[in-house]
Image (tube, rainbow, N blue to C red):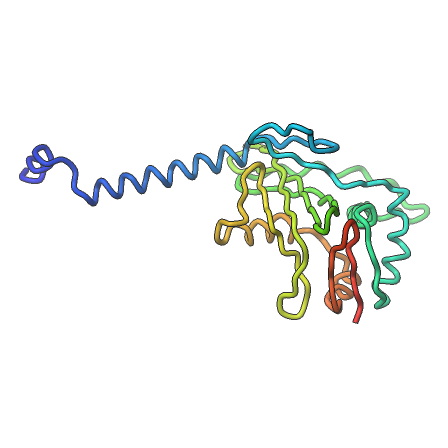
Amino acid sequence: MSKKIDRALYGPSWFEVIFGAFLSVVIGVVLAAVYLVTKPVATVKELPKEPVAGMVYHIEGSKDATKGRSWVAKRQQFVAGMSVQVTEEELNAAIAGVNAPAPKKPGAKAEEPAPAAEAKPGHFAAGAPNFRIRDGEVQISVPVTVNTLELGLNLLVQARGTFEKQGDRYVFAPKTLLVGSCPVEKIPGVASAALRQFLGAQAIPEDIAGAWAKLANVTVEGALLKLEAP
């Protein structure tokens, strides 16, 4: 009873005031992050001369199949242990090749397409990445569908950066990482988790992964990704 009387006479304690303020800040940060994550990203062919304040823009890398044809020869050179220089068209052709359905054997019966898997709450589905190389940086963008609570929320994850050696191999080191319109590269633990979940989940052929592990250097110059063999 005395506590109720003290509270009525003297108001909330310092602990209650500090905890309440802290809780308000946390809730505000969470709500702001959710708003930015779900805020639509504008996909454009080039940046507008007068960008809209607060708008996040996305420029997709070229998927020109004609310019990407040279990837077939460069892949052979790369897995054979030779140095190669790769364009964004070639990288996107490589991704298209990885995700292409396996060719049917002659005389094989046509199979009916399997029914689409039902989305499960608490899961997400990452689409094929798209590469863009400009001004000495690689942009990797991945469309993601979030099925948590059956929302079916479509997001775009964008990472821009270069490559650095960690341990005995080169890895992508993003300078900026956007989930939707929310910058997460400076949030401890979130950036690395996002990279693992959205970019690290992509399938890489064994021969390419093996050749990558042996690289002596990886650099980005202008619009070229340079892969130097030992």
